[in-house]
Image 1 (cartoon, rainbow, N blue to C red):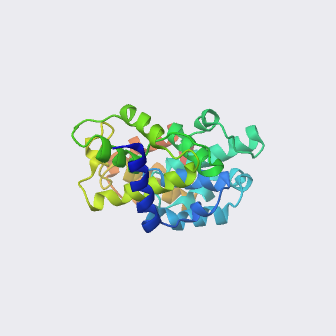
Image 2: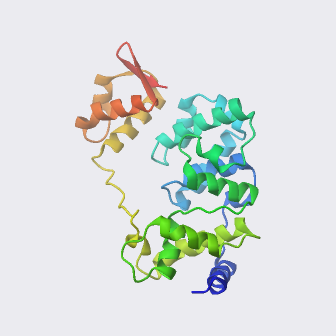
Image 3: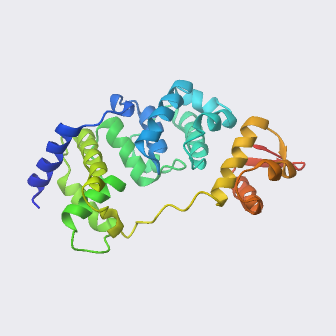
Length: 267
């Protein structure tokens, strides 16, 4: 497919099916950062309400950095993958302390923030500063596999990146990526999910009965009760109680909780 034909296809779809999200109504890099962290591994429909709650509760990066982690986790509750709340909180503290509350426009510097990564860093630069940068996420991956690798069974992101760069509308990068996102989210409704052909494809692990379920339960208890012994946790957690030791160990190693004198608290 020619670049011009591909661009026309995407733009035409977008003009007819543009989605509206609150993070598309701002160029504030802090708000963009919050939205991108929330959107990692989470569908937009679940993110909208939480995004609004987070930026209402913590309208500046300084307020987020200064907040106790327990409050950040309380507001985050419901989005899952709670380590993202820790990353978001720590990253805010770095932005305040190292960059004097000013978000870098450098992908390399943003990539150094906990929980960000190159793709999220590039997305922040595109959406906040309208700079043409190349990145891949699940919707983008889906589009390029469908249109350029329909006959191939195993496609790597390394093969996709040159095409993402070649077809980009460099004059309108922010809106171009919105268009890609909207078209990519629509594709599974009309074709078998092309991402199954990606070498990066993996099904989400089952939540029920997992260590992740126990981790989430521990954090919910600690948000409410502050200081809890392992015996009380074992009594109150939901999920497979056999996972409790592993869940506690991982939460401690990630500096989300601490243990002092046999009592667990949030970091």
